[in-house]
Amino acid sequence: MIAPEIPKNEEERIEDLISLNLSDSEKKEQLDGIVSILSKSIRVPIAYISSIETDKQNIHASCGLNFNSSDRSSSFCGHTILQNELLVIEDTHKDERFFDNPMVVNEPKIRFYAGYPLSTQIGKNIGSLCISDTVPRKLAEDELSIFKMIGKLLNDMIRLNKMASLQKEIHESKKKLEVLNGELYESNRFHTELFGQYMSPSLLEKVLQNKKETQLGGEERDVTVLISDLRGFSPLSEQYNAQTIVQILNIYFEEMIDVIHKHDGYINEILGDGILVVFGAIKNVDNSALKAVECAREMQRGLKKVNGKLKIKGLPALEMGVGINSGNLVVGNIGSKRRMKYGVVGENINIAARIESLTVPGQVLISETLYKLIADKVKPIGNIRTKMKGFKEPIMIYDVSEDIEK
Image (cartoon, rainbow, N blue to C red):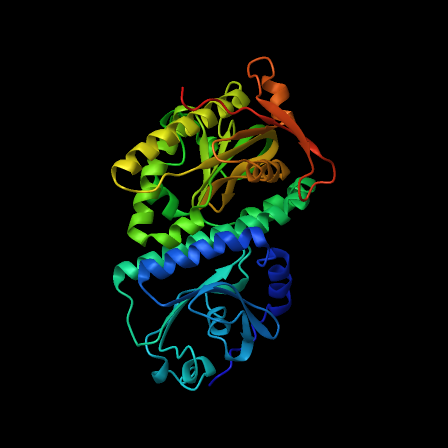
């Protein structure tokens, strides 16, 4: 067995890993869903997400493994983080690095391994997305494509979490934002190709008419952020095979994206079964707060149509919660001249996410800041003052759900 080398940027890499807090309970539910889908999609008995600390490997989500950590020196992941591309070992018995590895000689007796390096937006590899089998094998072209797509999706999720920890610094220093412009993550093609365009035709036309919209740079702007998420989707993904899950998501996203585009919403991210939508970011939208609420209500009504289609196909019904907040964000093109993404960063995204986490199925909750903008146009069902994780002062939350039977 050959132990993996220690990266030259080890100290900075460990600092970045600690700041991500991958063991957070909220993150674990998302990671469990990704591992389950990956295992069923590629038909492997073992799939897991791991990170490499100073002396050990931590397993944050897995199927087919019965341990939560192991020695770094004997980990496959320790080798994966040394490169920036996929590591594939078709037969561990024929590789001098692994033929006498404890995980090869003993349970789970790994004969095949593939690892996708996971990194932060500034390029530090902190772990890997892994699949294994107890027999030698090769990845078919479609399996390799699925593995890479899910790896990119997971990388985007990790980088978004890391970005959240940098929000305060970014808000206080425009100069730091300029440095990060060249380091932030690439646009995720998986979202575009599988779930459609990110913006409505009307917004796209405005961008094409103004060449400045395609230049690197950011600015502060008052916008409205909508975050939706399906309830209980991870357990659902464990009950059905990957093809069925994809079929359910396609029906769901087809309806939701049409509704969002209708209300001039910009889809900034699609993470698993969740959607991050921004109103008034690319171009000013008249009364973006009201449009976001109207969009959320129509999304809930649209979910009824989705469930009708799913019922015809003998598939389970879905439930969704929506949280909305208005406020100041840094928006702009992030990346490089060759590869860029229109992104949004700021504390108000976190507030929208926290509000969404408080919803029950069928509910639309908004912040007090947003409610003040539309108080003369929308009558709430009720309100409550609550303390949210990560914020010192409690905030008022308003329920603006409507009867989706209308």
